[in-house]
Structure formats: C-alpha cells, structure tokens
Amino acid sequence: MTWLPLKLKTYQLKTVYSLLNRYSTAAKALTTVNVNGKAFEADDYTNITPKIASYLNSNLHLKKNHPLSLVRQRIVNYFYTFRYAGNPEFSVYDNLNPVVSTKQNFDDLLISLDHVSRAKSDCYYINRGMLLRAHMTAHQSELLRSGLNNFLMIGDVYRRDEIDSTHFPVFHQVDAVRSLHKERLFPNQPDLEIFEPQYDTKNPFTFKNTISDPMKQSCHTLEATKVMETQLKNHLIGMVKTLFGKDIKHRWVDAYFPFTHPSWELEIFYENKWMEVLGCGIVRNEILVNAGPSNTIAYAFGLGLERLAMALYKIPDIRLMWSNDSGFLTQFENKDLDAKITYKPVSSYPQCTNDLSFWLPENLSIDTFMNNDFYELVRGIGGDIVEQVKLKDKFVHPKTKKHSLCYSIVYRHLERTLTQEEVNRIHKDIEVAVATAFNVVIR
Ligand code: DAH
Image (cartoon, rainbow, N blue to C red; front, side, top):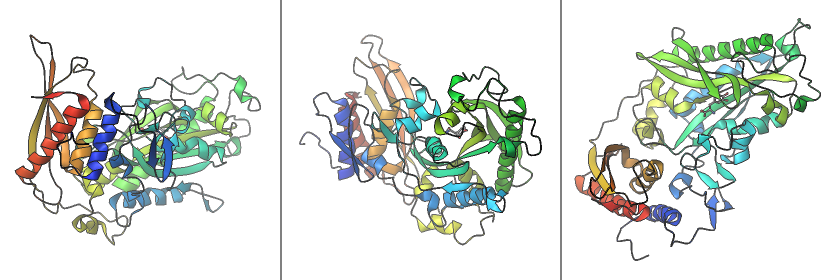
C-alpha cells in the first residue's frame, strides 16, 4: 500500500482499490462484496463501489419534508382517489429491496441478453447475477406473481451515468401496473373480448404473441387495447394536471420499451420547452402469462421523481436532493402538500474548474475509453463537490498516433466556498488515481 502517495480518506482509498482490482491484472480479485448487510460473491461483473453502496437506505422518498417525498405523496394521493367498492384500487410498495437479480431487472421484462441497458458500463453490478435495480419496473413481475392487480412501486434506482446538474447515479422512480379482467374492462358488454379468438387463456403458452402491428399486440383485440390505452392516458393526464395545474399542455410521443406494446412517452410544455415526464404502455402479454394473470390486460408506466421535483420547486441542481443543509429542507417544511413552493438558493458559491489531460495507453482509443468508469473514479475521489465533468478536447498525435483526452472538472461545494488550494489537492489525487487505474499518462 505504499505506492499511493496520497492522503486519501478510507472510503476514497476503498474506491481506488476496488477500481484497481478491476483494472490491474496484478491485483487479485475481490472475493466477496457486502451490500446492505449481506455478503455476495464477487466476479468479473462486480463494479459497485463503496461510495454507491453508501447511498443505500437513504430513503429520500420517505424523508419528512423532502421535496421527493412531497411529490411522492401527491402522486400517491392522486392514485388513492381511484376506488373500487369503496376501497383504493392501487396498493403502494415504497420499501422494496433495491438489490435485485438480473432476472428481475431484465429477463422477466423481456429485455434481450444483448440489450444496451444490461451493459456493465450502465449498471451497478454486485456480480453477474445481482445488481442494484436500474428501474422500479424490476419489481413488476414479482408483485404480479403475488396476485396483485393494481399497484405502485416507489424507490431508489441506480445507474452509471454522466455527471451534471441533472444526473446523479441514484435517483427515484414511481412505477405502476393496472390490470383488468374482461368483466371490469367491458362492464355490461359481455360480447366484447380482451383476446383474439386464436388466443386460448387456458393454454396461453401455445400462442406466439407479436408486436408488428403498431396499434396492438397480436393476442389482444383492438377494442381492449383502446379501452386500456384510454384509461392509461386519462389517468396520467389527470396526474400531471394535479401536479402542474389544470392548464398544463401535454403531448404523447410514440416510444419503444421491451416490456410494453404499444408504448408512449408523455411530455408536458413547461417553462417554454417540452419536458419528458414518463414512459408507459400496454404490458406485454408474455409478462402477464409468466407471472400468472394470463386472462387480464394491463397498463404500466414509470416516472422519475427528481425531474418532477426539480421542475415543480425550481431546484437547480440534483445534488441539492442529497443536501443536509437546513437551509434546503426547511423550505419544504410544514407546507400544505399542494402549496406552491419555489426554492430560493441559500446562496451560491463559486465554481472552480481544473483541466485534466492524459495520453491513453496504446491498447485504448478515444472510442474505447470507458467514460462512465472514468466519471465514477472522479466522483469516488472528489465526492459530491464534483459538479460536472466535461470532455473538452480529444486529439490524436500525428506521429505517435497516441490518443489524448482533456476533461474539465468543475468543482463546487453547495454549502461553502472552496479554496483553489483545496481543489488543487483533490484534483491532484484524481490525477494520480486516474493514472494508476487506467494506465494513462497525465500530460
Ligand atoms: N422502466 C422505464 C425506465 O426506467 C420506464 C418505464 C417505461 C416503466 C414504461 C414502465 C413502462 O413501467 O411501462 O426508463
């Protein structure tokens, strides 16, 4: 351990070492990783860092006065207004374990083995079989299998991503399913059917469902699809009107998700631009068949809470969601849920920008250098004071053909002014860690 000439905190060291373990052939592989109090066997897919694991159990969506919690409550209250025989239609699950299997996160949702969303560069894998859920849809099949028809799933999701004011590796989603039997889809219309005659609900596995018709899945009738689509769209327009006011303008955009067909995105016109709010669609019948309720038709949707909260309360930077500053949380205190709240910056401290340039080793090019691994390391060392990492310049040396990259790292503390000296020290640590972890030469 003497070769790192750094004064790093323990968690930073851990991050560097876990990265080194992945990149250095000399380093011996980790054998187990502890996540949420459980030990898992590590393998060549393990890329969860101690920094990321430290965000587990934060439960910002349940934290009193937290803007994410306020938006969650407004959405839940809206869905509680749907009643059947006097009881709420939707049940709410907001405490599901974020450690899920690849089966839950992908296979059960018909996400193909070669789909980009499975990439190691996009997810936090614990090992080849387990990961931190990348979307709340990961729980859809297990809840259907348990016999539920209508439910909301709310929680934290984890994705490796770029670094800027709207991206953070942890964010929060609300996902939902509503499924109906024929009797409830077509009350008093016993002649209408959910399924085409060729589909046999008793032997659902014998039917080959297709999605080549843009209007519907081949197993469904057009009438059933259209009734479900109308409900879905009405329910969601009602939700954005509840959140943003009855005059909010919206539009539907055709979309594709492996787990729904047809699929749409809902956009609203907010502050002079179209903003995407959610993805939704008619659940692929294969998913329902595998999970049990093969005689129903269902809709599903998923939305991100951060984006809604940032728009509703004019919160300029996603990192503020993680602030413990009383100046932040008190602005959301003891307010009527539907009160208009506009966040006022406590004060804004200056940014510091330092550049980081390096030559890539011969076996790597500008196109194969893993940006997300690099971002992760920068965040692992710099922590939350790293506001943004931007690729500033790329360059191929005409003679040596070596590739060079230059990134600007923007530092800003949300609660105090950083000194240039302090930033230089952290920047130097990042340089050393990057050089060691990626075998690059700092210019
Ligand atoms: N899981 C999708 C995402 O994270 C969002 C989504 C789209 C969820 C369509 C759904 C759905 O349930 O039906 O981007």
